[in-house]
Image (cartoon, helix red, strand yellow):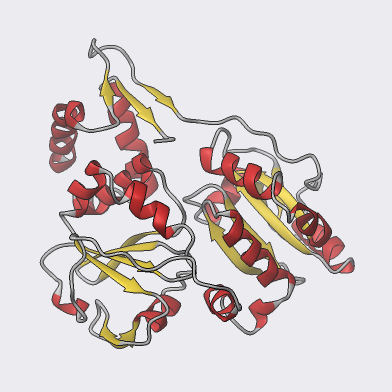
Length: 342
């Protein structure tokens, strides 16, 4: 507790120096949050009674999959993904023809029936599923089993690949990254260097500081923007300096040793981690995975995830969600302006 209080006091003194966080002139003035975007769920989403077995049976009878779209009001990532992929894309007809899309509010109170014996509210379902990012998309098979989970925003190109993967039932024989790598399409990204990246092949030797492993590949259309925006941000770079940062090509079969001392390759390690997002960032401390970034995050949220590990706050809070709430409240109490869209 003393460590937490000390951290909060330090936080209040350093807020004024942090880019993107502005303190109000009067300390007693409550802070504000901005960057939220109001959006509408597309009207063609299924008007479901949230009886999932019944929805799955209906979809299966017509050769379709159920897609659960777990969202949060005013979530900028939800708004962007709904606009780009579910409204303006050239594959909207494909979604409507092959998927029954059902919206679930992660803070909602509607009752969701998972089976004949299990019913819970939307927000309880979000907790059960350990939803940390919105939107979270769950694709279900005919037995109501998840065959693909997408945590957070995906670009239209990545979303189209995911839709094709599920529609073709390629999930029965391959992972999404394997499916994407096998597609006959030209590369869209060449791995970029950065002074923050360490040249190391034995990650088990990195035990003095937290380790951040960045997985990228040539099929990643979100990697270039990540370098140009998030990784170029001074606040992000200053916090990443507290990590041993390693960049890996997730399609590489070159021998390496992971944080546990296992002989492996970047491709095999990414698969064993079930990491299907690029650029995927996995944060370790003393060989233990603390948290991962497996969806696009704006600068404010990415910085908060990095601080959770860099400051050792995973030892003070039972979960990242608890830390996030406490830090947000501390910022607001200090009169800060929090911009989620930054």
